[in-house]
Image 1 (tube, rainbow, N blue to C red):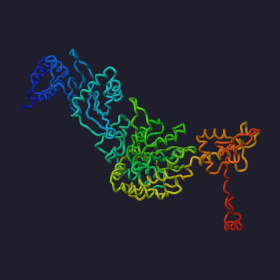
Image 2 (spheres, one colour; image 1 turned 90 degrees about the horizontal axis):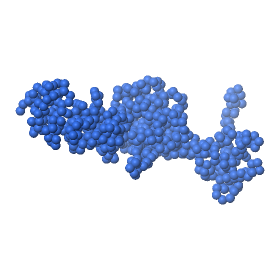
Image 3 (cartoon, rainbow, N blue to C red; image 1 turned 135 degrees about the horizontal axis):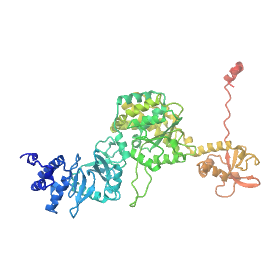
Length: 630
């Protein structure tokens, strides 16, 4: 059989303005396969001859011959450079966009540029199915985005595609919905299908996104889609490795802890732990943000604003970011941008829960809750745990105060190197964790470190620290091989004891300082500037109860919880000053200006006396009186 090009007459521009080429093609309609090939080739000839309306004219010709006829050659997309070719029924889909003929034979424009579905995407966790669509405008390259079926099925919602550059508006939205629905229906079995996920981290089959090449990202957020694609090796692994080994060999333990926290993120779920915070704070200009970049470079692009976010977002945006990170480290910079310091506890509790807040769905019921299990690495110029923070917030956070000591010898040079070289170690670390032998090894290390740290340290702090140490040990063993893994002695100074974790013990410390800073309020009734708060007698302060409750509430403490704790500690003088039933064992009465007033009698612990000098030191001073230090 001869090639189709040899059968095609040399049509000119004048021919295309007559019936000749259309009649010639129509006569070959019985061979549908050959007709499709001839149509594409004649379209090329028409374009070369300067005729741009060939397919529309061909459709009109077919309609005039047989309005109800179905010709296969008329129902396939002919977009230039199209990623797939699809049946399109009554629609004309070519370089000029998409159109159709109405019942009167008039042309109706659907869209001014190419658009078609190219893939069915099914989420492996929720089983929700979406469509990946492709489009291009003018001389732009083809672009692909993943869109929910709900969006493509609604004339109101499909307008949202306009933000991606699709020329859909309130006028043509219904036509575009019909067109996309028709193409999917006609090509459902022929469209490729791909599994997808909406977050990073561990997947049900044991693989890890974004390193599972067969799994696509199906989120509709362009910001997260860009981040997902950022987790690719870039630059030189050797350059990155040399830099990080210098950091691990350096004097800055906080910089090494930041790196360990990054590796610890995928271990949190493996060790059956809840998310926890590692917060770097100290003087401005010491490289804390570069420490965050160091942690980010393990996995992906460390440029601030790409993987690394700031505290400036809303709680909902932080939830979405945490859920997207999944089992990757959650990296937040510049704590001080939050003006309301009372939000600190809320953020800690919210992110450490590992699950989004329950919310109602528009269609009824509850929205699907998002989940994450990771290490949250943050930075700031102040501690994230305040004196009035709840005990839960304190124990979920490892505060790393680097003071005024630089984390890096040349932070600017480190930052520039990290921006150009990143994304190597994360993939290698996950390969280690997917090996059952290494996974059991790291669990064993974590348990060993847990036992070494147990004792005075609060249990949740011990668990978090043991995960950090286990992660750094595995990174040392499988990646760096430099013997510089963090030790128990390195991490222990940054952990808090059980007593320090007790919010009521911290409240007592604050109260004693507050009383000491306001002596006149507890002194002479004539020297208190118009407001008396109580009096100090012997080792007790008798704090007027109403004032006591007011100042504690202002500082975020619970007066009831504190009094219960203080009673258990034997710090209240209430038994001999009963006022009846109820809480008489927590309060007492004192007279101020001849008025009997309910008070909180709180014992003030006296400082321990200074120990006497050792005998040999006394003898030395007797012989060398000029050496006395003061």
